[in-house]
Amino acid sequence: SNPSLLILAGDGIGPEVMAQVTRIIDWFGDKRGLKFDVSEDLVGGAAYDAHGVALHDDTMAKAQEVDAVLLGAVGGPAYDDLDFSLKPERGLLRLRKEMDLFANLRPAQCFDALAEFSSLKTDIVSGLDIMIVRELTSGSYFGEPRGIHMEDNMRVGINTQRYTEAEIDRVARSAFELARRRNNKVCSMEKANVMESGILWRDVVTEVHQADYADVELSHMYADNGAMQLVRAPKQFDVIVTDNLFGDILSDCAAMLTGSLGMLPSASLGAPMENGRPKAMYEPVHGSAPDITGQGKANPSACILSFAMALRYSFDQGVEADRLEAAVEKVLADGIRTADLMQADGGTPVSTTQMGDAVLAALEAS
Ligand code: NAI
Ligand code: MG
Image 1 (cartoon, rainbow, N blue to C red):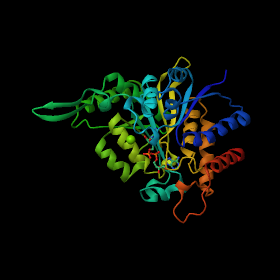
Image 2: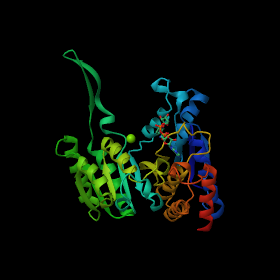
Image 3: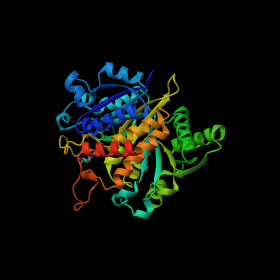
Image 4: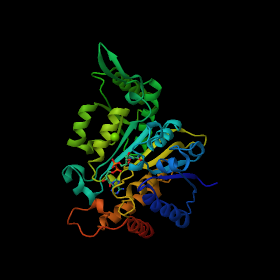
């Protein structure tokens, strides 16, 4: 049977950018014989409107069964005043948690045509292609104890950075596996100089490396130095693996090396399923962009590139993933741009659909 894909377009520009991805999925089916069983469902505010919860149990069950989930974006001003337990983001968090998606892959790739949008000089970022692997399910955002307590008549805010060996082991393996498919190089970042969890992190990564991945080049770096190196000379890196908190910050930092939010895809991977594929969810880094919703201005590239990641990491279609990424790159090189990719005097931007048209045309020509 065909590989299965659950599309959760979500809110705001989510459905607008996802509509372009659906056209591309159809193209791969028609022209490349790569057919998917696609189902669609609600998440976020859209699910709240229909069911009173940000993710229905049936949707959760479907997500557990498919080969990959493709998500648009969730949230919007209409839901800002909802109780935290009902907020659109809860839909996302539930998916990540119940699918146990522990490895968050955030590529930072600089398309040459967009190098002018980088916050760094062109020669520092041109040709940049790195991947940050952020641990997503543990660490200081989840560790217990946590809370705000009274101590000596004073409020104290507490979070706990806690990692088990098993949690470090599995994300390290994800990073090493990824490195073997790329340039065989991993840099692990922590703060082993001042944190116990950092010492354990470095030990476990080193053990996994020695036991099973000695062919991969491994280096270690303190995360604060890592932040400096990322903006000083980012091309020294290939795969970076780090914890949840440092990964949150470092991946946002790396993202801005490349320019626009509208270009950034991501993947969140879990343990292998029975068929050997990892549990997986793919989504653009950007949110629901209420300021441009319904105006045909959204850049669908981040969502399209997220589908390219799905082709590569869930469906073993690396060649087709390359083809899709090259199509996006070709469109940009031809100067076809949505408004977010234009300087003030840049000319006339194309719409979301026209960007989709252009990518399809480039695919067709490839
Ligand atoms: P945002 O990413 O939605 O938008 C930030 C800015 O970037 C806006 O000016 C927006 O127009 C622009 N932008 C974002 N994606 C774009 C695209 N594809 N093409 C062109 N321009 C684009 O972040 P913001 O404004 O902080 O949050 C808006 C809503 O989205 C909130 O409800 C927030 O909670 C939610 N959100 C959801 C995320 C998710 O679903 N994973 C992630 C981040 C925010
Ligand atoms: Mg962040």
